[in-house]
Image 1 (cartoon, rainbow, N blue to C red):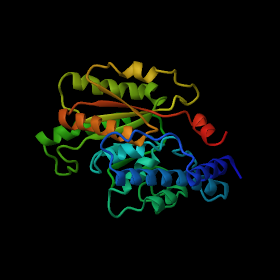
Image 2: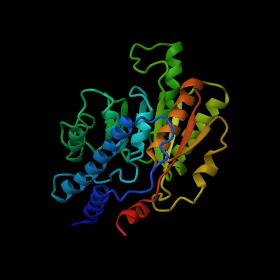
Image 3: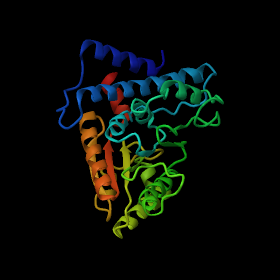
Amino acid sequence: MDRADIVDKAFRDRVRTGDLPSKSTQDGPLAAHTAVAVFRAQCLSRNLDRRSRKMQSEGQGFYTIGSSGHEGMAAVAAALRPDDMAFLHYRDGAFQTMRSSQVPGVTPAWDMLLSFSTAKDDPISGGRHKVLGSKAMNIPPQTSTIASHLPKAVGAAYSIPLARRLPPEHRTLANDAIVMCSFGDASANHSTAQGAINTACWTSYQSVPLPLMFVCEDNGIGISTRTPSGWIAANFRHKPGLKYFHANGLDIFDTFRVARAAADYVRQRKKPAFLHLGLVRLYEAIATIVP
């Protein structure tokens, strides 16, 4: 039994016996049926992670960078509309599985398994690479290239109000749609991310409409260097033209409430927002399950 199986067994045992963390306050607008849907999406994402590892060990799969620790993004997906375009961090499987429940006719588990196996029938990549994305779900394809999707998200957000003034024949986004762009705390330091966020702030500062919601998934791990405690908040809390929000990414009720507030701010004011989603460090999360 590998470590992932040990963690999974411990999780199932604790759920079965009711040995759970202290209850959330459950404040805010997240309805019970939606909370259950969020949890189901989180479980599907986690099990897809585990399946990708099994497939790789059996020579049937070729990609095992999973979404573990980022399952809180399912609550962000629930807080948005399915016609809001989403440029995803490559660990956002839970966002995609949650959105799949909002869009009829998609097969999230099957599509992801095709992606893991680099099958030519994979609807988003045609077998070229494991990638999150779906045309039906308004999720442009994105691989693990660090921060490369942030400039694209800025451009897509800029196009929404522009299309109201100069309607193109290929227009697909609604007048009041927004663009969501997620990334990790390490990606926030990348020059590509800094340039995109600065462009968004510069645009907003001049009162040019830009309906864009950045989501930074902060687990403090980084890539090769840990993110200093408090760095993301200190860096983005007071940027001109950018509204800062913070949520506990381990609490789906708090995440949903704050993500909905951030999305409403963007949708109403057509100004960019920055949602700082605090996540526990993965090794700390594991330690709470398996001492």
